Length: 305
Image (tube, rainbow, N blue to C red; front, side, top):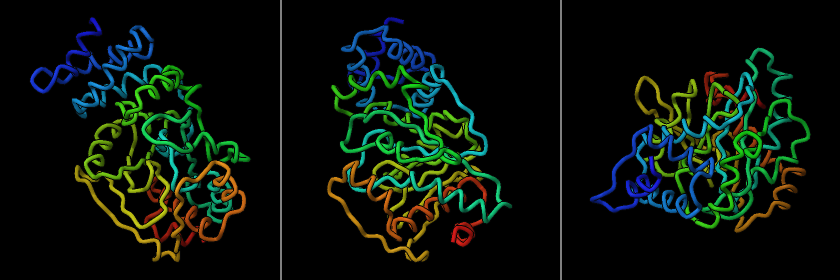
C-alpha cells in the first residue's frame, strides 16, 4: 500500500483517523525499518500514530513486525528484564551486581532451578536524558547468569533509527513495544509501568510470547526496585495486584540523585554499600518469584540471605 495512506489514517484528525489492521501495521513498520520511505514520512507517521493513540491490537502487530527482523539467541532457564531504552537520572543501575549474587545463591541453593537474566541494550533513545543500561554493561566481569544483548546486533534496523528518533524528540510506538521483544526466547518476562493503564496494555501486548509476564511498579522505566511498590500478574484471566514494603526485609534506602552520571553509577557498583547490596538481593528475590523458582517473596529473601 502507498505509505501516504498510512499517514492519512493516523494523521488526519479525530474524524478521519482510523485503526490500522495487522497487515497494514506490519507493512508500515516493515517499510520504516527497510527505509523504503523518507525520514519525513517516517516522522509524520510515528507522530500521528502516537497522537492518535495506538490500540493494543496495533501494538501487538508492531511487535510481530519487529520480530520479523530480529536475530534470536536462546537463553534457557531465563527471565527477560524489560529495561527502558530512554535513560535514567535518579538511580544507579543495579544489574551488574546480580551476577555475583546469583552465583552465591546457587552455591547454597542447588535445589532451585537455575535462573538466567536477559537484558537488551542500545544507545540512548529519546524521551528522557541520562544513562542507559548499555553504559554499564562493561561492569559485568562475567556472563554466567546475566546475558546482555546489543540491539545493534539483534535488531539493527531499529537501532539505526536512533538518530531520527532523537530528531523527533518524542515518545513513539517504539518506546512502548521495544522493552520485551524476546531476544533470548525467555520463558518469563518482567517490565515496569508507572501508570496503571499500562499494566493491562503490556500484559496484552506481550503475553503471547512468555509463560508469565509480570509488571512491577519501579522508577525510570526499568524493573529495578528502589522503594516500596507493587506488581501485577495475570492469573486465571484476572489481573492480580500484590504489594511489598522494603522495611519488611530490613531495607532502608532513601538516596535520591538529581542527575546521576555513568561514572557515579560505576563507583556505586564497584564499591556497593550494604543497602545497595540489600536492594540488589531484593530485586533478585522478585525475579526468582516472578519466574516461579520459589513459592513466596519471603522464601526467596531468606534463601538469598
